[in-house]
Image (cartoon, rainbow, N blue to C red; front, top):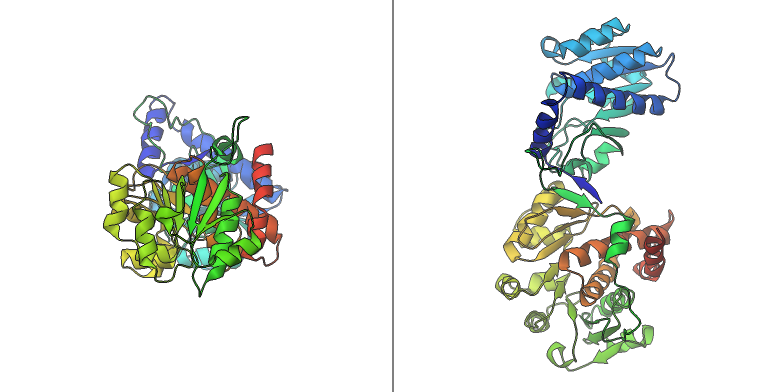
Length: 489
């Protein structure tokens, strides 16, 4: 599992390690790793033109020491200083000894220097920076973006919030980000993830889970194949369709019968032994999936289930949503169900110890929180946690970065690393809701069901798309392939 830590936790771990090392040793480790990645990006170091954008912090020092290493290998290295009187003295001296040169950000020609570089190293602001770039740095960041060379960010693109991924103003867009010691949440969560490009990790010896004061809980984590494979439900020799779990799907309406079909399609491929469908689209569901158990008697009389999915295409059927929320089994609430579910009913389920998973997209989350959609999009981590706290439910916030927050909003937020922009298509969320509900019925916790469901759904989307538009039904059909790819590693 890839884990990311808050700035506070990383700083504590750094202080603990530096107390045991000779002065400057930690920065030299970071600079050495940075220089290796820069050399890989350049491919040919000798004769290349490298420009360092250097602020007043320690990551400016990392950039200077890395630049010195590249200069000793024959690169022409120039540092553009944004705070000349506060640049890292040791790094500056090392660069000059290696043959590098220095200009100031306000000097004539500094912008053109960045545009002509083969490689630009962003060492403007470290992980403690807040808000967008300062005015003097903006022309340099814009020059790096339109220039000919690759951009490598030191630890985090300048202007990106390390703890949240938020970008409040101008920021550097990197092709590669070299992060030291631990991943930061802002590298995993959009919009910060988009600004980071390819993330390369450099181990500098930090202990994030040890017994010392630097140890701390992860702020965000991203499942990998091995983690998902461990969580997937696997039938045993004594399993039958009921022991494997039965998921109920209360979805669809006369206006939106397709939502029911797609949710059932996702549920049938999610590991539960059987799917019960309740709603007005029974004929359409049976025509596509004859193995579905269809009932016309309402959720409370449909038969025993281990979990419910409610809401996709439900229209204004608040009675069905309320009936499902009264059941003493886990529930996944999606789409119209989110609008129709009362906060007190959802929180009451948590008080009874029954897991609930809510799966809004950004627009739905904004409506529930009473804010603008843009606020959710720019602060996905905060929005997911706030919803999880308000409703006492796990929250899967869909979007460019899908995040899953635990009920109550505490603990590490799961960040989904799979997916493709082609998944932004009508009905894709219905498939995900059925898949997640099936995993709930198979016995996964709400956090795990949401995380595993999003992971498989994202992989299925990639397999279905292969660079071309896809339908939600295409995505549902590739879930078994995604499952097999995870199990096989």
